Image 1 (cartoon, rainbow, N blue to C red):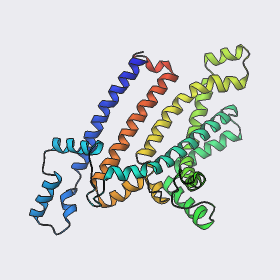
Image 2: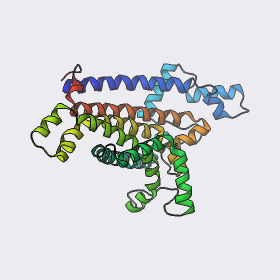
Image 3: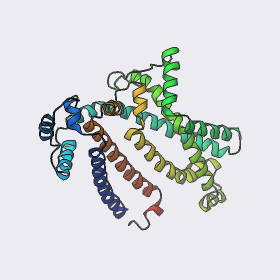
Length: 318
């Protein structure tokens, strides 16, 4: 297991480096993306552009710009071209809001998906199973931003059952924090819960026909214990892998429109406002931090996967 973990950590470092280079090249080669021209305005002269390129370091070689950008992203001061504010400080302001949205929704769809998956596995072929199939199709088919907009308008604005916008910090008022986050959580949960339940149901049904489950039954173990203790543990392996991907995707940018619709003021909304101005430092920082988070989370999921299923470690060291 130690060798497996070490190999995964080395691979993670290499992937992080490759991702950082790729993100830098994408944003420096963006069409019409000369930052000096955007900073100077439409009527700037060439001499003014040259001064700006020199002051901001745009006239230096790509390796030098890359090194300076990484230093600013992870230790220095990265400044927005338009607001002139520290990008990392602005991102950190939005991190609690984005994490509140992503963690709350991820826990809801995980708990809901596991509960429904176990229920429908026990009652496979019954009405509950057919309802779950319909829920999974609806959840995948409906765009999350459309569902969020509808919920915000009717449940928040029209009926007043929930706050339709805004954010209350958890440290200020936990009850109001959860109340303001309820609709965003539900909008994201509906998108995933049916799929998770279906994946878990299929995995449990497959595990129920395995040798170790038949052995447990032959020993007289109760059906409930067979499902919860024997079949569920192995069935959770694909769910853990899927959850890490989906949670990382939400953190890495999937929550942008949800944050904007509900005006949560998180990292996603900050990235959205920066995109409207084509303000490269915030866009690059959010993209890179999000990519790093996804890579690190997937590495952690691989280690958990290996702990749950020793077969994963075969060929990767023990």
